[in-house]
Image 1 (cartoon, one colour):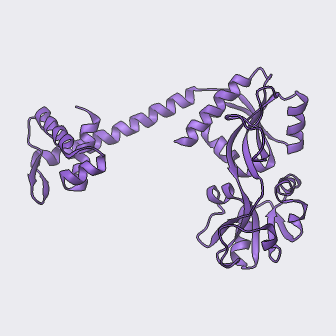
Image 2: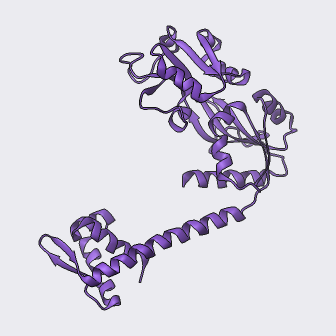
Image 3: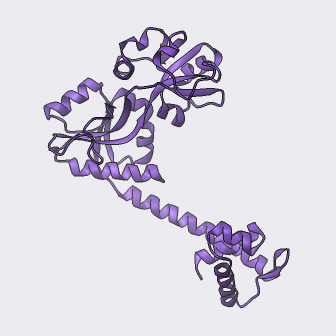
Length: 306
């Protein structure tokens, strides 16, 4: 008896007919009928009566359903526990250094997806400190770092540096910067706006020199001209924008879609013609722990995909 056969029985009850259940399971009606017949043979009992109006479960079929649901549920729990066990046994000791922007956007997901034994330490450095370490060849940590990516940059495969460069950068996600505001604040825009379109608004932003440098690198030095409200609390910024219809928050698309800033009352409008901001892991190629870093990154990506 296979788990798939029990899953077919459960779907048959939910769908109410062979035809509907087969469509939901992406198999033929004949295939589902054969599976059902095989299950009846194994249990030596008739499980369903087929009629023009659908299927009706017999007394034996109803009893089989109760046990089938319990078995499928327990099988799922077993798979999840085994997967967690294999993850917890994978210990890749890493010293992680994070840029301020990456702290805001991605650090919580990294911390939540790896075991405590894997992260020996975590520290936050400015982008200039991280870049200096990488360029000087003194880097002995894995860096979670944000990179302003020129679309014409020398991207090769999964790395933002060619093979002769001393640094490897493995991107995790790319974002477009734009404006988060109350719906209707900018009228009938066509999916994106220019930076000048936001010039009449009171702008808010995260506080911090490093974050300001990131925004200036993407949007230009004039982007903070109308910024009058800067704090480090994301919820406070979001509340302020929701309460004021002539206010917008400078933000990136990833933070809006994945973070607590998302709200039915708010919308995100990307800016035209600005470079992408990419967050990813960076490390020195000659670091003796480079293989560990690659294993750590792959483990994090698998966790994210689940």
